[in-house]
Amino acid sequence: MQLFIGGACAGKRDAVSERFPAAKWHHLAPGVPLGAWRETVVAGHPLVLTGWTAWLEAALAAVPDDDRLRREWGGGLAALADAEREMALEVVLILPEMGRGIVPMAAEARRLRDLAGWLAQDAARRSDAVWYVRHGLVRRLG
Image 1: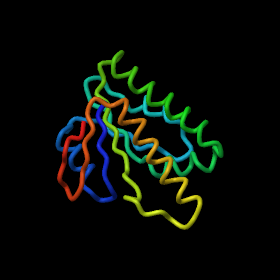
Image 2: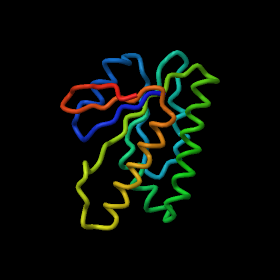
Image 3: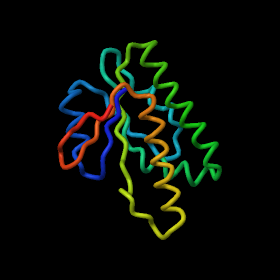
Image 4: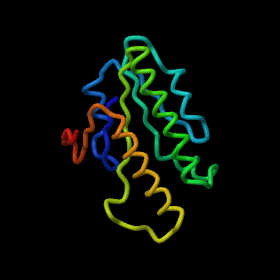
């Protein structure tokens, strides 16, 4: 699995499109289980998952327990890793980097940023490569 992370309009989509021109893209829909990506898989084509912010916002509204939510997406990330091995599937995640140290006033916005950060950490732990994108510049972190 590969993770591309950066702020809004940083160039993540362009970087992924350039590196994986034959990829099939799956945009996570708010309120739809993470496993819906299976509908997008095409043999021999990398799978790119994007749309995490809106998906996470909907999940936060539906699941008030942060630990339960982390367990649920942890299972989803594990399923992606399993699919990589079993199906010889290249999985690419595009995640938002939120906040950069700015703490929002609203509790809901703070919760979203906290959970987005934990999601990024969980995804990074499962990824073979982590790429940080800023101003269209791509740097491998791990």
